[in-house]
Image (cartoon, rainbow, N blue to C red):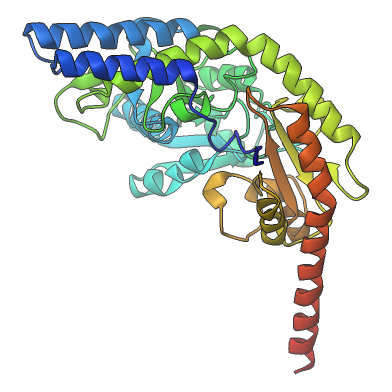
Length: 402
């Protein structure tokens, strides 16, 4: 029997999404047409796409005209951040600063290289020991002063950290960015399943959601963008998706995303309660030496980030894999690379402590039996890590002697 506890990386395709995707593909095969075409096939396909757009908007608290379909949250992050920043600079050349939290997914963090190639400045906000971003204030001096000096183009802050699960103060951040005259972007990919996410209420200008985080297929996502904000895209072409993201849209994927989001919203309250209970059960039965990295009140109920008494997470993950349990040492994008978590380092942890971490993430089909299986396998996984710690220690001592 296998146990899947890596839902923050990707969650299984929901039956409703598969049904919507299959039905759409069947309809498209029977009556093909590009949504941009004027003939009957194009009109029918366009109606399918716009129905999906409206359903996605309803699920996320957005107007239909604010919904831009993309290939996923990674593209939505890149497109939202850079198109928004370029748009602001096109209106005022002084606005060449992008400010982000230091708990962002790589899809956001790695836009730094793109931004700097385009002569934008980039700063990261600090975090406290709990992994919560420290909000800048107009009276701050030093690194944060440019935010309030007419230079800020865009600020980006995730709603829930994909690695450690902390809930970030996005509304307060958006208020400060608005005061500074900039746009605000938020990656909400990890928040939708457990939090009442409303684009209209959150106060941001741009928001990203990925399909495979909510039970839709891989390869579909959405960027919500307020009408009227300046955006200069690097994806020109046929003028699709408000001329911001060109390319013939994935109509079947959009239909599947709409179905998945509608079901997620309908089940959200129940899932949030169940995941809190499962989280509490797990935390109440941890062995000595294993501790949660952040407090329960500061984080999503669906992401449990643990600190382990080992600096060799690869051995821990291998032991869990041999036991048929899928977990992660952090963001899935770091898989196979043993290096300290940048987020943990930003929180003030040592390098060894930043290595010895484990992420358990829950989904709508996670059961108490899954958590019990994880708890049963955890001691042996820790021993595997400790054994490799010992091998590393002996090798280092021999190297020093040599």
